Structure formats: structure tokens, C-alpha cells
Image (cartoon, rainbow over all chains, first blue to last red; front, side):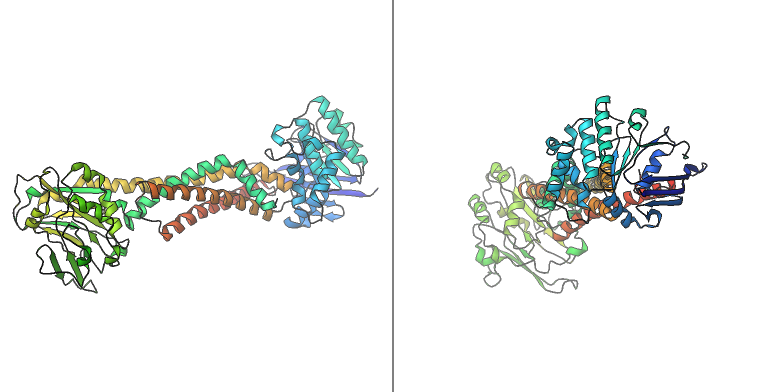
Length: 221
Length: 389
């Protein structure tokens, strides 16, 4: 399997006036193969989310090289990054990042609103909903759903554009044990279907499902 | 359903609370702005009822002069053609027209005056002042308005002393407006006797007063008293004047009193402060809306929206909110204007409307730009890209 993500000597430094510069990521190198399920563990403030934001093209590195699907993301312009994110990356976040007063259908549709691909929205959404068994949630408003239901809608949204990489930031952080298992199993089956999954988690049980566990401490692996 | 329409309907549904608050701010702002606008660009019917200065006629003696100084804003100094019209039962409307006016008729008083250099035309003032019976009061509304020339200033001496009740029913401002052929009606002089009901024809002593109506270059409406009035006649002369009129007289007490002036100044200050407060509320509110929706915009960002998309969405979102609130606000304002005396503006001048709409929208857009700029600056300082949390 080829490397889908190649990170070399990555630095991310935050500078706050009057304080010492803080290296959230400190000379980090990492390769992730296509279809691999990687769990990133670490204590709060260790740089996990920063790394995920950089891989997700939401943040830019201070120094170093980040290649995703063979493309150096630090050289891309903001518009290109957004299009790249839309095409290749799906996000599943701890707080679900859904629009609460919209329905499940409307939330799943969001990535399709910005895509250049010609996709029949209705067909695609119904297919994804069927695959992850959330057809009954399509017409329900998000603010009336349970945490587990919201996270399944978020996973559907992450998958709707058929991205190659799924980034999950503490996806089970706000869920009970039973629902945690459902969501982790769901991410596992996503990885089994050939997509690369990178999951940030505190939870050892959740991390144990991954093919590889990486621990970050002070911005270093 | 069309996606834009769907977005619009969703937006209205989701933001109904915000729209109501925005609309209320808009209405208050419009009311206050109309108040200020009227002060500087008065063209209103309702102004007539705003201020009423009364003068005891018995206090006037021969050759006393009461001047009602019409203090126009410069933009309004253009009443080139002035027509004073008195309505009375012997006063047939057709006589008021220039050709048929009978100068020999003692019932009428005609003043032909050469105006100062500031006037480009000779102003002819036709004053036809006669008695006015109850019957005629009811006829006024049917007066042939085509007899009035454009830019006519209608000064309407009336008397409603026959029945106090009748007088209260009669809206001087309203009728003066009805009579006017244009919007340049600036005031109504209402001369009447209040307590002596037996004076069925009060202009008998209006004749005594020899009401001289004169419009000078300084826009003075002058009432000159030819004979001393009988003191036992509790007559009053009331000049309904729009509030920026200054009333002066050769008799001291009739000058607009200091506290009245102060009150006018206070009103202006309150209006101005109110408008500033409305703008501030608008700014605060849009800021609040943007902060509330920041999470939503982040959702769009992680789903692949560009900065351009997000900015466009914010602008559309705020514009829709502004647009709906403005429509509702203007609707309520126009209803209030039509059915109540709350708003002084006679109609809604296009410039007033345009300024208000643009101001609201421009403020909204400035706030949005500032919000985005500050957010970007804060993130730049921290060294994180704009899209990151």
C-alpha cells in the first residue's frame, strides 16, 4: 500500500504576544498508508488536534512538509485547499459540527453544496443513509436527535463526498459506552472499505480497534 | 424547491426572533429619523397640529402687529406663488381664481404686493376673508383644488365659534391639506372666537381687525390690527404653525417663549440620541448574529467551503435579515404614517427612504467586514490559519 499521508519534520508554532513561542508540533514525521486506521493518542495539549487540523488542511504548518495524496498542502492556495478538503477529506468531530436546526438530510448535503463533482444529491444521500442505517433520521432535525444519532449523521456527512481520508477528532468523546462501540465499529468498517481513517482519542478501548496507535507528547511522536 | 428560495425560507424560519427585533429597531429608527427629517425638510400635514400658539386678541391694539415668522430651511425657500384663501359663505370658490376676483367687493381684501428682490416673481396674494358658517365648514372638503396654484401657501382663516364641539371635530390641518394643491402648505392661521357662541359670523370683527395678510421675503405672515378690540370679547387668535415657525410680535408676550424653544431643542437632541442608539443596537445585534452563527460557518469550512463562500454566505445571510426587517419596518412605518398622527412626514420622500435603507444596510455590511477582519487578525496573531478552530 502506498503512503497517502507523508509528514516530514513538521513544526507548528503559536506565538502569543508577551509569551514564549509554543511548539504545538515539534519536528514530527509520520506516514499513513491508504486504507489504514490510525489512532492518535495523547494527553490534552499534546498537539493531537493541531496535527489533525494540519492534515485536514484547516491549519497550515509553520515549517516542514505535509504531503497528502502526493500534494504538498503548504504550497496550495486557500481556494485550492478548500476544494482539496471537499474532495478528499471527511471530518467527524466530538461536538458533531452539525447545523442544529437543519434536518439530517440538509446536514449530510452540505459537502455536496461545495463540490465540483456532478452528483445527484438525493440519490447519494439516500444511499449513504441506507449504508449506515440512518434513513429514519433524514427528515429529523438535528436538535431533536440523541448524541449517537448525531454522530452517525456526522459520519454520513463525512462520507457523502466519497473522500479518501476520514479524520475523526474524539468521535466518541460525548457518547455513552454502548453508542461509543457503534460509532467505533462504524469507523472500523469505513476503514475496511478502503478509506484511510485517522482518529484522535483518549479512549484506549476505541484506539484498540485501529491498525496502529501513535502516541503524541509535547508535539512529538 | 428552488435552492435559493429554500435557503431564504429556512433563513426566515430560523431567524424569526432576530427579524422581529431587527424590525423593531428599524421602526424606532424610522420614527426618530422622520422626526429629524421633518425638522429640516418639513412638508407635512401633521405638522400643523404639532404646535399651536395662541394669542389673546383682546391684548392687541390698533396698529399692533403679530408676526408669524416662517423660518424655512433654505431648501424650502421657494414659495414663489402664494395664495391666501379664506372660505366663507359668500366666498364662492370661483371668485378666488385670478380673473374673477372682485377687488371692489368689500367682503374681500386684496393685497397686491411687490416682493423683495429675493423673489423672482411678483407674488399676488388674494385674501378673501369672510364669514364662515357651519354649513360652509362641511363644504370645505369639496373645494375645487384646481383653483389653487402649485406651491400655494394656503392660509386658512376660520372660525368655529358656533359650537365648540364642531370645532373639535374639525381638523384644521387636515382640511388645509385637502385644500392645498401641492405639498407646500406650511401653516394655517385659524382665527376664531371660542366662548361667544352667539357670534355666528365672527369675521365681523375679523373685519375690525382688518386682517392684513402679508407674505414678505422673510416669510412673515403678518396680522395687523386696525382697531382696538373690544376687551370683553374673549376672542383669541390662534396660529397653527409648524414647529419651526418662530412667532414674534410687537407685543412682547407673544414671542415664542424660551421654554418652548428649549423643548424643541430637547426634542431634536432626543431624536438624534435615539438614532445613534438605534445604530448602536443594530451594530450590536449584527455582531451577536455573526457570533451565534460562527459554529455554523465552521461547519461549512470543514465541508470544503472557501473563504469566499463563507464571506458570501455571511453577506447573504445578513442582507436577507436586513431586507426582511426593512420591508416589515417600512410596512409598519407606512401604516403608522397613513393611519395615525404619529409621523409628521406628509408622504415618504424618496431621499429619506433611500438614506434610511442604505444606512441600515451599509452599517450591517461594515459590521460584517469588521467582524471578519477582527477574527482574521486575532487568528493571525496566534499564528493559526483562518479556517482552523
